[in-house]
Image 1 (tube, one colour):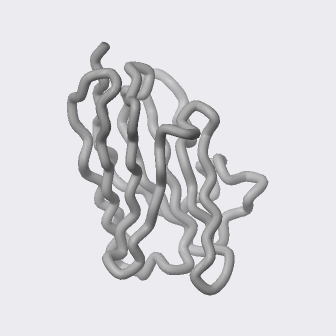
Image 2 (spheres, rainbow, N blue to C red; image 1 turned 90 degrees about the horizontal axis):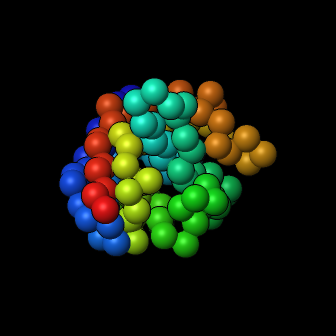
Length: 129
């Protein structure tokens, strides 16, 4: 299984970006998926997660720091997960990683990066003030 993240770049405060993560090697329909970010010298930070429930039902979760500004979606037909980031702030500057779990995410530990089996290579988002 491989994850390829893209879409990062340099933007100004208040701008928007959409990150994409293409998953190959497995279908994402029942996979748990997450977005994390990391600033050099700091711990990896949870951003958002999508948890498969049943059928076509998913629960989506967000860190408080991005709630209301970021939206995570998945396109199962394209085997791709997205992170739409609006109203970006300088503190959103980080390398963003997508991650997948080969099984159900535990909702009480949704932001625990240890739950995720596979990680993409990261894409850099820089927000200038």
